[in-house]
Image (cartoon, rainbow, N blue to C red; front, side, top):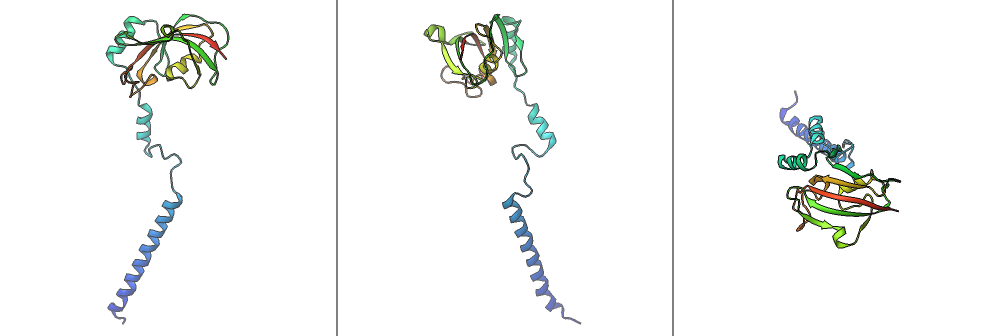
Length: 185
């Protein structure tokens, strides 16, 4: 009959060997990324992904009231941008990457105060579509024809966002622009 004390070192050695093999395997898997997710920026849980996708931005009731009162005919895009065509244009639509020239006047939605105007400066603004200062401008310009004038109601998330454009525009400020497309190159 074998001595139980003689089996104890063998058993301990076996457990240490097994633990070492498991740690080595874990280290290799982590280091090589063998089981990593295809998109690590997305949560693994389908419920969490759905909740993140459903996250939407909304205007305050005060902003909605001002829009309803001052801009009742505004057409709303899926993004939240609202537009009113004041004067239809003719000709081609600008494409992303083309240079456009515009005149604009920017006002804060709630108080209507003007914070910027290319007409007052006497100098139209030129920029490449897709690189404009505001996401709402790019979205609108892609559907404007040469010579067209529009009123754009740009929600804060398509304007200067969470941070604003200090000191001119406070954070989370929705804006209104009178815009005219002068040239496309």
